[in-house]
Length: 309
Image (cartoon, rainbow, N blue to C red; front, side, top):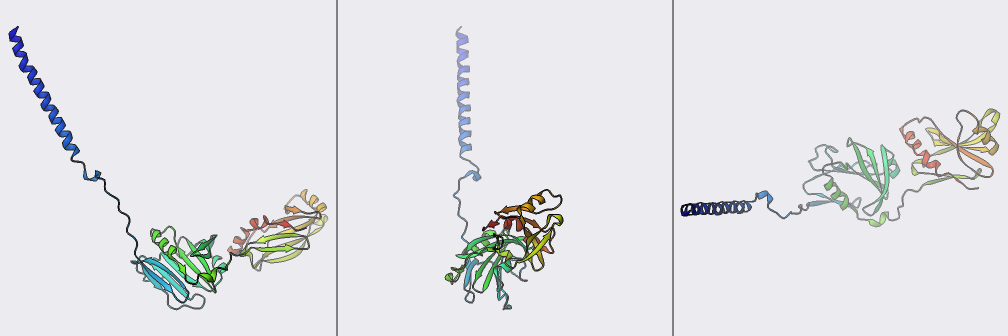
C-alpha cells in the first residue's frame, strides 16, 4: 500500500506542472496576438477633401462673372458677329479646338429666349438662376448626347449655358454654376416668366389658352359640309406652314345628336352652352418636326377650353 501511494505523488505533480505550463503558453499566445493587430485595423481620422482653388472670369461688357477650377482651361472666342457677340468654353484639358472636350460652354445671343428654346427641344422648366428668371431645357446638341442648357434673358441678349449632367467632372461644373452672378442684378428683376396666350372667340363664346411656343399661330374660319346633316362653322388653328393642326367645330344641338349616330370620323365632344355644342379634331400628319412638336401640345391646349357665355 505505501509503495502505491509514493508512486502516485510524482504523477499528480507532473499533471499539475504540465497544466500550468500549457495555460501559460496559451495566455502568452493570446496576449501576443492582441498586441499585433493588422495595421489596416487601426482607426484613423478621416480627412476632409481639399477645397477646390478657383479663378474668376468676369466680363465688364456683359456684366457677369463666375469662378472655375484653377487648373482648368478657359477659352474666349474672338469678337464674333452681332448675332452672337461672345462665347466662352471651359474645359479640364487644354482646348485646342473650340467645343472639343468642353465641360461647359457659355454663349451670348441676340436671338430671343423662345428662338433658342425651339431648337432640338426635349423638355423645358422655368427656374431661377443667379437671382434671375431663367429657363432650363434638355436637348440634343453638339456634345453628342442629351445636354442641359440654362437660358437667361438679359436686356437685349439671351445667355445660354450648356453642359452635360453625366460628365464625370460634374462636381466642378456645379462649382461654376453656383458661382455665376450678374453685376447688374436689377436689370432682370422686372422680367416675368413667358405668359400664356389666350384666344377668345366672342361670336360663339369660348376661349383657349396657348403656350408661348404657339405665339405665331394662325386661325382660319371655314364651313364643313355634312351632306344631309347640314353644315357647321369651324375654326382652324395652325401656322403659316400648316394652317390646320386642329380645329374647333360649332354645331347646333340637333345636328350634334345626328352626328353621334353617324359612322366614320366625327368631332370629339368638347363642351356645350345653351345654344351650341363644341367638338374638336386633330390633324393626322405634320409637315415637319416643328409641327410634330406643336401637335404634341394640342391635348394640353384642348384642356384649357372654356365657355364665356
